[in-house]
Structures are given as C-alpha cells and as structure tokens.
Image 1 (cartoon, rainbow, N blue to C red):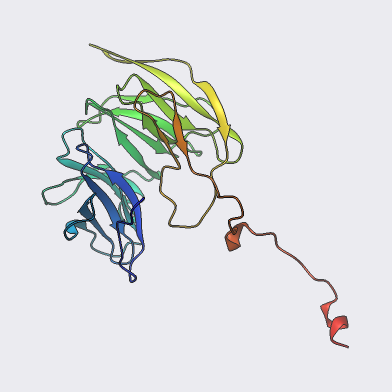
Image 2 (image 1 turned 90 degrees about the vertical axis):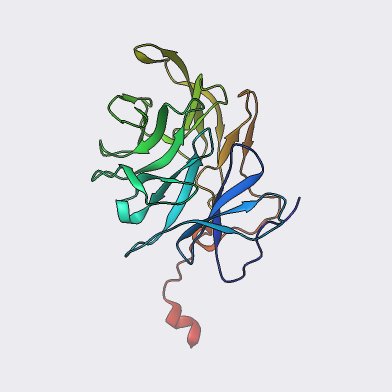
Length: 243
C-alpha cells in the first residue's frame, strides 16, 4: 500500500485507472480540476481539465479503451456527461438533458456508454451508442438502477439496485450487427457500502476482469461512523436539567 497524493489543501477524489495501468486520473475537488499522475507516485501531477464557471464539482468517470478520451461529469452540465481529450482540449457534452445523468462507463470496445439517469423520475441504468448517442437501451428493470460497470470483455454489465443490503445485478450483453441484445437482470449478492461523505469514490465496487470476484467498500472493524450516519438524540424538557 502506498500513498499517491499529499496535498493538504485539496480533496483528491474519484480516482480512475488509465487503461495502461500506469497512471491514475482523479479530481481535485477544491480547485475543480482533473489531473493525471504516475501510479508509482514519481513525478508531478499533470492537469488534464479544469472546470470553468459557477459549478460545484467535476469528477472523472473513466477513460476510453485507448486512453485518449476522458469521460467526466460536472455540475455545470446539470450533472451531465461530457468527454474531453486526455491530451488537452475543450469538453464535448455527450448528455446534458434536464435529467440528472452520470456514473458513465465506456464499454471495453469503446462503442457503448453505460450510465445512470433519472429521466423517468427515478435513477435507472441505460446504454447508448458511442459517440453518436443515437441508439439507447434501458438496462435496469427494478425500482432503481445505480452505478453501472462493465466486465472486462464487455459481455456483462453490473449495477446496484440501491445501497443498504440490496442486490448487485448482472445483465448479459450480446454484441451483434444490429446493436445489443440484453439479458434479464440477475441478482448476484447483497451489499451495503458505507456512506463516508463526499470523498467516497463514485463507484463503491469494482468487478474483477473475469467478473468472478468483486472488490467492495466496507467500514473497517471499529471504524468511526461519520456524523451524518450517527444516530440523532432528541432531548425533551431539557430546561429541567438546568434547575
């Protein structure tokens, strides 16, 4: 285990791996920028993108398979989805509708983008063709669909129904000349990732490349619960204690 960032003036959040496994891209929440750094910790951070205007946050969601394009979200786009060349340049909005859209992940072949949207009132998981965005599939069929992630071969997509003892779902994906054929969502296991404030990565789980194992966030034994998760105590007639 090694520490990658040491900047006491910044919240460094939402890390994602570059496809080469040699670099990490993450957001600097206090300066509204996204930077790249060598995973060995050697060298300085390189600014990839800095948000402009009146926004509250900007985060990386992932990169294209060739590592050339960054998929990101920022509040200026109504929590939408944009792309920007990793070598530098202006972002192009991929989705920026009135709905809250985010948690985007490009498929391993770079032709499809899975994401979360509340366009129907509740968050659900969708897939759109990339980069044209013309073809759309709804993946989740339950009450909610959250945080989609692809298996390394692109033949399975995972998503959470909800957090707090709800199942993680798996959907088979068949790629064909006419688009995609999606299977029926199947529950894998239930999990309850901790709520640890705004520094939580946007994806509280990560599938192994073969989809047979998952890395899941959980609180360590004896860890302190953050204030917003602590119980609330209401004292009635407290003035009597002052007498």
